[in-house]
Image (cartoon, rainbow, N blue to C red; front, side, top):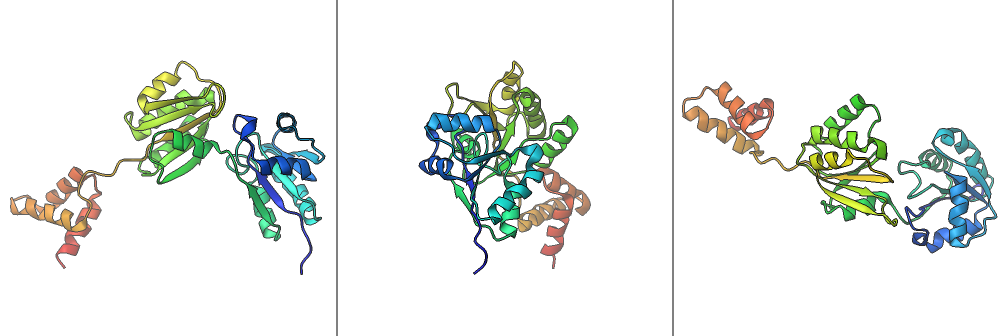
Length: 281
């Protein structure tokens, strides 16, 4: 048998109301010998709200010190002590510290366990009114306008529902960039202060939401955007080749026919050309 190690526990914290904390999180807060917290003051406030007395050694664990602190926490785990990681809200590792420590723990054979619970990603997704069968989480868009525009342009064809986090002071600019990349009519939802007293969900086309956000928005923000619609044109190679053949039969030169079919169906000319070649074999 190998050496006995501690267990790395990832605890999902409430994203709004303290009473959403799970019973397992309460027990872990009371029993953990080491707690790595994104904000130690918020941890103590949560513990007080839950009526939990903390006996752990508490260390700060946030974006700026995640890399250096991970080695210290791994040493605690290898020494046989459990470590509970908790962020300000939601699940550690989801746009919050935790990922690097999980990777290090897995590499050393340290057990990793999750205390499941609240998540702004799935909460916003299900309340948005947009398709939930397939979705992707894109985190925070880049802060710089040029980088943000390029990232969003690369997602323009994404068919899955997309979930983003965003800071309130950048929301209007981001929604405007989304309208430019995805189309002003693309359906979306802005979810503000989820599960809190002043929770608000605004649904509508991206263009309208960008105008609304221009007046200023406060609070924790999650944005959900519908995926790109399925193309309305022909997609099957045999159908594309047949459309070219019909144009050729009417007297259109093949090169021109391929270009016209590609344009009509929003398909690259190379794809249409390959379909024509395949049909003639």
